[in-house]
Image (cartoon, rainbow, N blue to C red; front, side, top):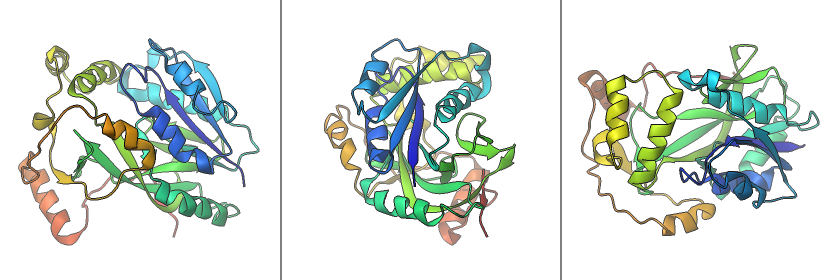
Length: 292
């Protein structure tokens, strides 16, 4: 069995992406790794070069400004990295620049890939998610945060990154997947408030679903206000991946969150309460099909 990891990244240093940790976390179960490095304003390429020179291939890209709206540019960059993976690899492990796999899952994920290698009905593997917010002590605790997504796919170029690169489709259809029995730790909402606001100001240029007033308000803010932006949070009680330890030790801002506080409209508050009582998320969007 041959496994190749892949991702895309741009301005990792400028916006404080944990890209080194992301790639390093999955390298132990990848025979190789492909990174599409976009035209950056910082030292992103050098950062990627120094991770594991004998195991990483860099694909230099220029982001297509025609795909700015709707976040489609992220899927385009994902596909560039995926298309650079040679055909002799069996599985392809996708990890985004703010996602990390805990080392406790490595062995199980590898065994799952081996067990399903010959089962052509399996297009990929579904991972659970922990979405960290503000600091490394809090995680998203409502339907605003997606619970599952595909992060390992078969090396079939009929598979394409979907919409803004959250998931994948094959010939336009949802992939058939099995559980990886592992979680991805998503750190995209853990940055110094200043870095967070700068990232939002940059990212909003690639979407068309916020008003001009909202865009101006966000752009005018000097620092992101974590207290004003969340729906519901819970205290994280687990351990972080070892590759994140140095980054966590560098944390230089403090955030105290009242986890009893819920900020959501009545409809979502009712759905939230139902999920807490019965363990079911009603009307959940699923960008995949589970193998029966």
